Image (cartoon, rainbow, N blue to C red; front, side, top):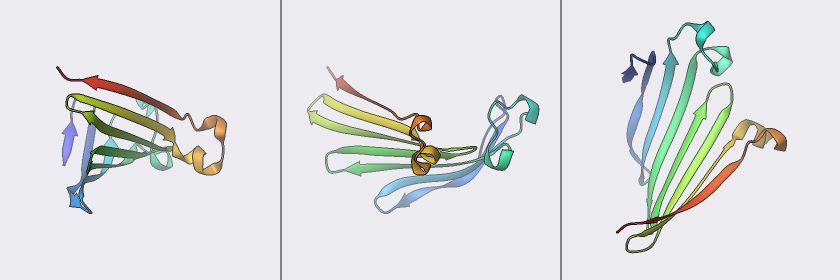
Length: 119
């Protein structure tokens, strides 16, 4: 269980290791007065689900986060070591609801990459 009293937020969930990765699954509730919430969650209520996983690969790491509220958003980040002190990161996110429904204009697909040099 975790809570942020300043943001009026509480969550209850599970974290553990399974299938070779770390996983987190939690239900979240925003107890801000409903009229002040910018984006309501599941069925118009201030309730949300969040899933995250962290996978260690033979060469690199993959992190995936899925959020379910009024819509379902999915993001993934792949970190690949190129050589000692050099990593390449590829990240993407999209609105999965619209992706599945075929509403290409609403998917809001974003991606990017970066190169990290450690001195």
